[in-house]
Image 1 (spheres, rainbow, N blue to C red):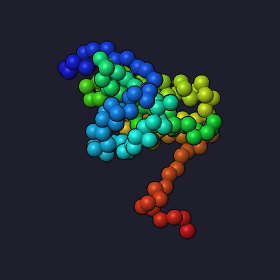
Image 2 (tube, rainbow, N blue to C red):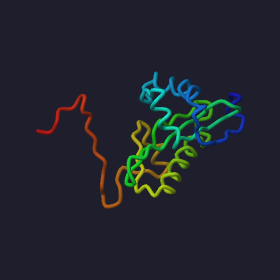
Image 3 (cartoon, rainbow, N blue to C red):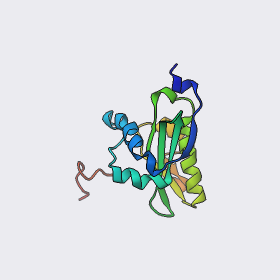
Image 4 (cartoon, rainbow, N blue to C red):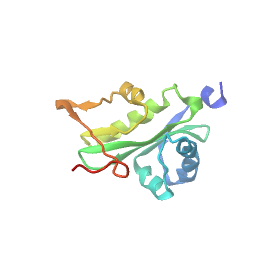
Length: 146
């Protein structure tokens, strides 16, 4: 077991001082194709609603809530270091994002993910009340409707 997995993880709101370390932290996830690349500007935009998981001054997790409107927000850039995966870090980051959405009176929070099971275990579902579903089209590859 790694040292980070044995030590306690604390959680805090992200700040401007985190941008460089955060960029370094998420880069391996980008390289693996698990996260979209983020510019420094995009990271700064995520910070006001972002949360850091920290272990002895090292970032071991991050997630942000991007608020689109009072109706909709999205959990963005969720990443958890391998050495603390399965320890509740991701679940706590998601819970903090959902709590913020609740405090801001956001109606719905969505997550676009390749790991459905994790978000299902956090209370997310594929449908909303009234059988509403989110549908997507990727405009770079899919032809428009005719």
